[in-house]
Amino acid sequence: MDRTELKPIIEALIFASDSPLTIEKMKQILENVSKKEIDEALEELQNEYQAQNRGFQIKEVANGYQFRTQPAFSPWLKKLKNTKPFRLTQPTLETLAIIAYRQPITKMEVEKIRGVDSGGVLKTLLEKKLITIAGKKDVPGKPFLFATTKTFLEVFSLENLSSLPTLKDIEDLDNAQLPTLLRESNLSENEEIYLPEEDEATEGQGERETSLQLGEYEPETVSASDEAEPVLPEDEEKNPAPGENG
Image (cartoon, rainbow, N blue to C red):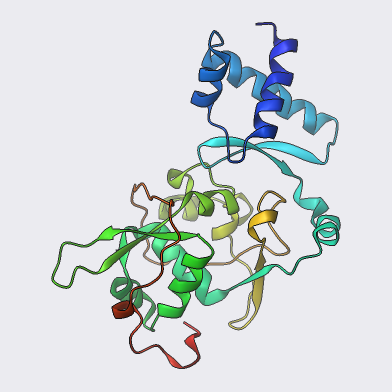
């Protein structure tokens, strides 16, 4: 297939897809087109958008490709949507980073690292579909295991879990090169940052960059299912901390 014919077809497929479209899915649809041809067409499209200073881009997230608006246009998009973004607090970010790097992990293990009750924070992350229940740990009591979801990858513009930097990467790289979730900033303990709502997840990164100190967290390769929207069981909600502030 000629490149001039292939590029608009790929654009149409990505535009019509409800979730990031994988190369494998494109190959199934295009049949006689090779992976190399698709890769080259995608790269050419990305370069064209950048050269033309377009308001959108094709970005690789969650193991697929998706149209996303440029983060620089976030103020105008918020006026268009006219919705109040979900506020992701520092304790929530801290818990999310622990899960991302230590998954699958139990509530008790999260609390051992954080030093405080995390039931309320886990419920919030479950409701926002940033984490999911990925099974039960084979120990007495069978506690639930938590892991990140595909939505987590999409929101933080990560290709996959291996895109999370290791501690060595963090030591070697300048802060500006780190993914948004892991970039340092000067957030105070009570300051809040903004995460787009589900219908705004493709509109760039939100108002502010997120902040975390990784400490000892090391990444593990884990696949997490995000089919359902689970609710913390009662035994995971006992003795909540005052105010559920994490």
